[in-house]
Image (cartoon, rainbow, N blue to C red):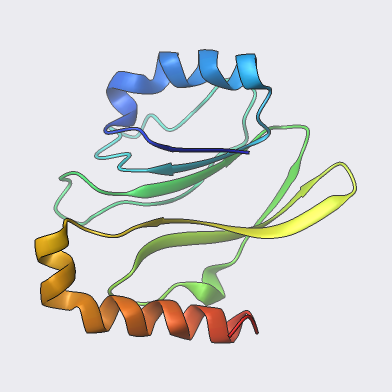
Length: 130
């Protein structure tokens, strides 16, 4: 599993693919994918679970899973005011729930801290982790 803040998938896609091959990651949890211009394909990966901002600026999160693994999007965990996507992933005989979450700049976090915290608690309670 590889987690990365890519600061625009448009400009880091080639490097990400090289890194994935080097580390043989089957699951990629990405933040700040930005506006990806409808070009979400990564070599040897199934189409991602993705959430981008309406304003097409910065942010955005994605979960990519290698074609040798299985992916089930967990839309039931999506909540307002939380930039996050969730999925059940199975690699070989190991299954787990993963999420890719991006929490805004600290100033934005202070302004919306209650909403972000309560949203995360809501998701954790739904997953029976809280």
